[in-house]
Image 1 (cartoon, rainbow, N blue to C red):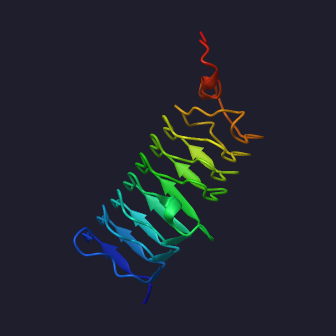
Image 2: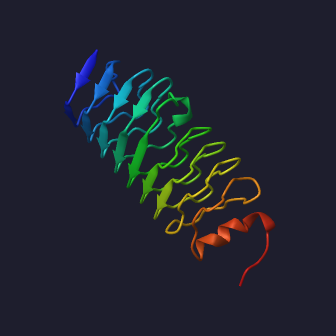
Length: 187
């Protein structure tokens, strides 16, 4: 089933799942996908605005050119989605406990997002932009952060020896998060 250029507003998908298919250039506004099953659904150039996708299952789902704006994405395991041609953009999203484990997210934009305890372990975030994001207790382990921009973000703790950070951008005081592993006091 192919669906193109359709608008979905204020639909509750918690009781009845979004039908499997390929959704292209569709917009989902103020829809509730919390705990719903989006497995094997394909989204191409779609927008999700003011939606709740908390704990949604995305196993085998494809996200190509998908934008999330002011959405709740608590606990979503994006690592279960199809990694091939994965392309995402986030603005003003609440993304605590969300996992991007081992995903290729080069150039992804995270703007004004809260990513408390998110997992970027093993991910490729080269040239990603974290613009004014709260990254408290977020996991960066074996992560490629080359040329990533953290200049306006805060609360991150990144081990420079356990991640690739060549030419990544940081600013004071956030850059102090690069020293956390040394357990030193800075005054």
